[in-house]
Figure 1 (tube, rainbow, N blue to C red):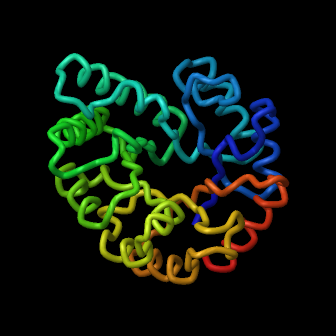
Figure 2: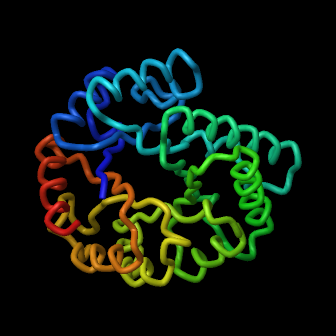
Length: 258
């Protein structure tokens, strides 16, 4: 298992190099960058060659990887639509993002599907969305995984995987969000297998710190081992009033299980 941390947890006021240094000092293997139009995030650098060069240089300097891109931009331009022009704009963003992620050596891309974008199997927008993701993946020719992150029940997740019908398209599994929504994350992992679970967010439910809330970390670890998942575990834990202490605690606790 490799451990990464979302860049936002490392400190909104930090420079890019300070984020890399802090993540390395804390013991992480990688960073999940967040492409969004916000000066506190550095993910937009992935779309320009100069930015990629700087990112890769920092990866080498600090022996880090960029685990993934959390594509916040997909909330604005996406394929979850029945409008052809909007769909094409969404697919263009996907292709551009895959190119950027591949150049950075990422394992995958998170595609947020929350609020009005939450998947429903009877939503006429869902098939075009998953078709766009599948086509962009096929056209790119990379081995990146494309991960729909959503807080829905098992049947809906299974429907997403079935409709996507591509081995690189699946779910970005958030244990904390799903537990908070009343689901059984460990049972869902076992049911989805690696055909469904492509990347995982570490997060607690009912508490800020891992191991102090409702998520059964041992059950999660056993389920991930049972399906053969040994890829990235990306921290999206609560920052708390003392974010560095929280991250250190959370990484230490999770390593007892995975």
